Amino acid sequence: MQRAAGLVRRGSCPRASGPWGRSHSSAAAEASAALKVRPERSPRDRILTLESMNPQVKAVEYAVRGPIVHKAGEIEMELQRGIKKPFTEVIRANIGDAHAMGQQPITFLRQVMALCTYPNLLSSPSFPEDAKKRARRILQACGGNSLGSYSASQGVNCIREDVAAFITRRDGVSADPDNIYLTTGASDGISTILKLLVSGGGKSRTGVMIPIPQYPLYSAVISELDAVQVNYYLDEENCWALNVNELRRAVRQAKDHCNPKVLCIINPGNPTGQVQSRKCIEDVIHFAWEEKLFLLADEVYQDNVYSPDCRFHSFKKVLYQMGPEYSSNVELASFHSTSKGYMGECGYRGGYMEVINLHPEIKGQLVKLLSVRLCPPVSGQAAMDIVVNPPVPGEESFEQFSREKEFVLGNLAQKAKLTEDLFNQVPGIQCNPLQGAMYAFPRILIPAKAVEAAQSHKMAPDMFYCMKLLEETGICVVPGSGFGQREGTYHFRMTILPPVEKLKTLLHKVKDFHLKFLEKYS
Image: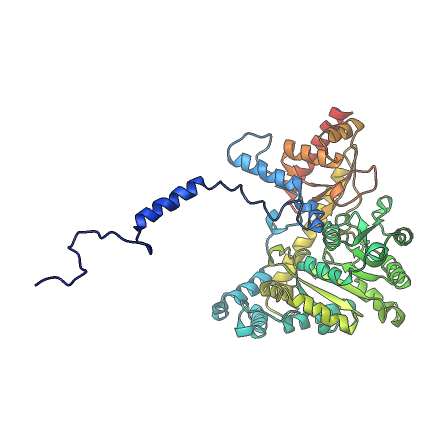
């Protein structure tokens, strides 16, 4: 039987034709030839370059994770590759990361977090009932009883209630959960409230008053928002005290070129470690009332007070104790975090802010701004809940919790005194008492020849010093110029978090380095 017309024998290859009768192979050859004669295009210019990027972002600097830390990372890689150094490890004393420095987590906090993260453990006899009770309460307030669900933008309601109860116990002043906003660490709250406060242009641009030395989050956010940084200097000769006359000077000079609107306080201080007296806080509040300034109180180190002569007083408590003329008028945002204190849970990024006397219409704007990022990490919110709602007397976990908390804070107090004493034994190093927080900010003598050497390397003198310290000892600290300091003075910031024996080793290495540095450049 004959094959149907149009079919070809098996194994043959019909010549394919294009729309005008040319074969596909012929057309392909012509197209290839055309491409060969077409001129090559140069690579397209990048849209995003250092010249075209947002100049406010380019102006941002964050010394705590700046060039010195990048260099430390490079040295660590070299050590791993077997490159010989005068040391065997890099000690990262640049940042207050407690667990990275060997501090053990608080058992109760981790138990509750484990239960919240994996609720099947709620039936396990290995966990105490008070931890299970906390976990059930948190999970019942989460969508689908899961930490993996979004929360309200302001935070999980029951956690905000627990924060309000904590503030009420701490201050003896009632706190409203509606004034509590859970945040991604304290930093998120500070950035958010500053976004609301910054406005204007020219001489009406918002001025934000910050302490010098400061925590560089503040200068970074001010740069990003194109606000005006207004420096007020802490009194190094008086244990880094805050003097209201210095605030008056700063405001008076700032009014020539901006509109001072915000006053930031860090208490206990970072990097300086001072704890403000109640009288000082009263003076600051009166000054803010007098000058119509919005107060930001960064109180993340409120548990870290070591000097027996010092006590933490919250700005909220003192504000209300000063009477209704102040408590009904002064606008205040205060901040707390899971990252410091005795917890050291930096990675959870838990925090809150309480805002007092905020205009009702601004509350809506704040919630709108917070809703853009949907919600803070719910695991961080849960960690914050455990900080403000710890075991109480009579509960199963109370004794162990109290023992662990007291050990961490007692250990930090011991290391604060050790650091102060050892630094003050070194010629050319002067260290104020570490009343609180978790850092030392010693003043260092840098000889004129070393200043000249730094200039030849296009470095600030204290950056030059800290870089040499890193390269010769493996100790990573942050130059004082990253925090701000009075002209002609030099400092560095280091954490006191390393274990006692490692801290002693670190301090002796700094001593030996400093003496050699003075000898070399004198």
